[in-house]
Length: 632
Image (cartoon, rainbow, N blue to C red; front, side):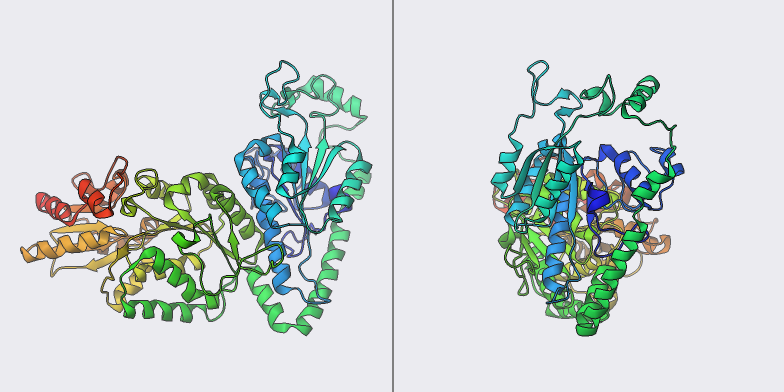
């Protein structure tokens, strides 16, 4: 019903800006969306369907963004698809408020999502759906496949009294501020159509349509049972099911009249042509807005970006302030903000600590969707998945913030961004034992290292305001993966640099301080520990030692440089190497070698003033100096 009678989409152009979005949140039902895409005319053939779950096919086991055209997001980890859909609906509502003008509605589409019991059991569904209700996302319509079955059996325990999901879901969503349509027969097309009509008539609330369905519908022996949730029916049962459904065609045989009934190419092309005509009229009346809309939807930075960003970095370097890098980050957001109208910022209830609000920030509210800042509340996981949805929709550059310690809550959404090659910016402050008195519950130890382990995640831990400004520039320019900015609570001194050194920050690692001739030892440091490295180097130099200090704000960026550059920074001939970072030590072995030393901590922190905690764990300039002398 949805795909035939309501979905606005063009199979010939899956990236049409004003298409409706459809998200299969319960991604284990992937063959459902693959079949819909094939039947409606997308570039997905019968042969592609036959290659289901095979290597390099367009039809992997769970829907993956970038494989089959028409798949809007990667789903499978339950609850994240509906959260992505919330992000898409936020993007639609905000773009409409920013760009639409009277008589010129160039942004006007729905976001539909299909979810099951598993999605609703996952905590992230609470985070995202609660916020969706608060923001009154009237163009978000969710279909709840209420079939009472999950992998372990009947969720409400009718068979043996063992139950694990007995929530009153309609009341739950009503409490969120959703419009709820309960007890819809999911196998009755007329009932489903009536529910969709009702949902689309409600403009000030998202809608949950509760569809009561029978899992494995048509299978005489397995319908309504968990056996058909994730296992093949088997040849005999397939034959019985075909007979029960009156489907007298062989495997992958689809009659021409079925194709004709499903084909959406002509209707989709007509819908896009009509939109293009509206867009042309809009461009005639508002040429600057039209050009800006096209630029933002294309994901391109403004034409004057490079010059303005470079000028800002030069100004930061000349100012030479001592700042916490979280404050330097706020300054960078402020400095770049006038040139990045596509900002969509936010924080998980920590704006005053993460410092993510700038002078141009405007809260996105139910009554003012033109805002560019989302108050996510204490919802780290939901925030990160919603950001993925905003990025997938297009038109925005999303950033969101929390304490680095609570990146743990968001972890799987960060991984999903990397898997999909999305480029949200994650601002993680209070990055080490340097936050002090809050103690080990809030002091990150292993988090920076584990973020570095995520493929395609770029991690930057800047040592001062200049490195912070550069890291923000690179994050805003980056495509193909997310960026994590690891920022300090405590103030960090400005490091003196030549213009050439400033230009090399973008390489992820560079020589910050050097000696005459070949160094006897190299000290590698990141973030707040660069100051310790510099102090140790100065003390050693006074003793006649030749020391090089390498600041390495981004190990993944440094690793991506050519071998010649890496050798120029870390020459193989210099084996006396010490790395210092206030975190776990195991990560640094590949940089210091088997004979090198790593100064950090491989245990949890302590509650005390920051200076005392650093001293307690031996992360001091004196300890760095001692390690270098022992190696030399």
